Image (cartoon, rainbow, N blue to C red):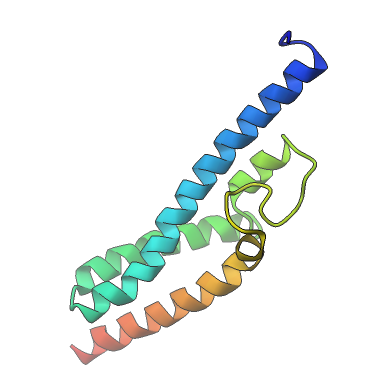
Length: 122
């Protein structure tokens, strides 16, 4: 297989897509874990930890807003494949990748409400 050949190009594209999917999955795991950890930290009375985890997730929310509610890595991954299934750019089951913002959006909203309630309760 020669790098300039069509099959060489396809192999390079697959490797690049694989790397993007790995990075995207790791980033997703960090943010999903943070969303799950916020109410746990809150329940344990670690409002400082919950606050900083919340800030981390809010940064991701602003990144998504700035990119029309898409992860920037989705656009990068799209350059290397014609596949547009819900999970073409990440190693998640298709149903989870497709419903990710809905599921974790509601979890984050509930976590934030719990954190705010505990913070105000003193």
